[in-house]
Length: 69
Image (cartoon, rainbow, N blue to C red):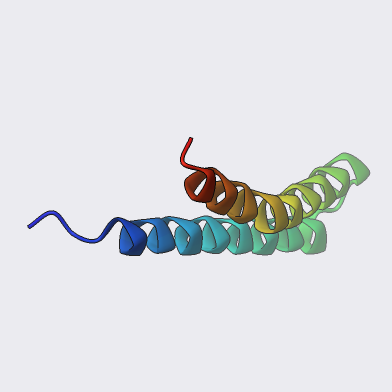
């Protein structure tokens, strides 16, 4: 039972998006609960990185698989 490669790729893209959402939520919790500025900045950086990951990584994976590289 080898499975459909398109289905595996779709699950990989969805898993990437879910991981990015989890990172964004973690960053928001960190920003909300932090009492000092460095931790708030760390939380904001995590949120920005997660949003970037959510926007760029799935497209890059789809492009890579579409081009056959």
